Length: 253
Ligand code: PGA
Image 1 (cartoon, rainbow, N blue to C red):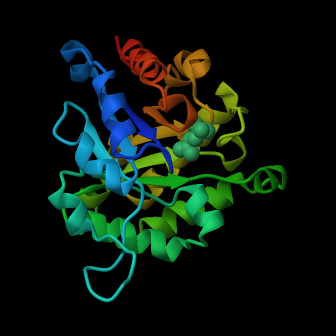
Image 2 (spheres, helix red, strand yellow):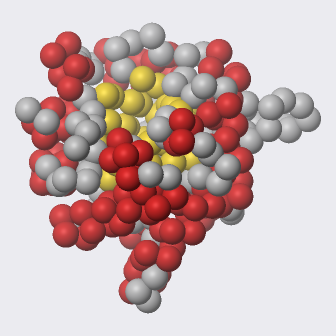
């Protein structure tokens, strides 16, 4: 089995402009030894990205255009993100799917655009409570994974990180139980093995997202198919986010 390097990402959502982002970074002190074991990413609002690049963690944008350039008022292209030092871009986050109507087709176009420019998608998937209760967990994940990765080759998919985020756990304080999280992660890895190869499925990192916090991180990150976290609320404070980094370090120590 491949040893997958855990990846812990902060998703600040629409919080922290340049001043607050700089203040966070000033208080966010990472140990060199920890950085060898864990990859750290911060997904900041567009206008705060430049304030936090060039440090010892990777920077992510929370969205991008699926177009190259042109008359798309208000949009930001992947090449612009690359110019300011962005390495990852979130795609398919449930808030973008539910509040802004993003479809699997658009998520796929963004994933392709990001990979074409040499950046890496953090591709989010996850079911709603109604879908889970109706017994549709696997079919929902299968559609999202299959459509979102359409046309992406073996080499491309290895540059993607998948984030499994049950919609009912995002920002609600309700976390998936270890059994629920492990089951869904193993399912996603199985889907990737079917779409690509078992070797690729073994290498790809799958983060858990949805009310991850210092109190539950050790347990979640200790599960065999969970390779990190995508964290909203608990990543707004540097001490809390550092504690999650420690949990990820401990999960591989
Ligand atoms: P949460 O958000 O940790 O606040 O639940 C996670 C996310 O939306 O990525």
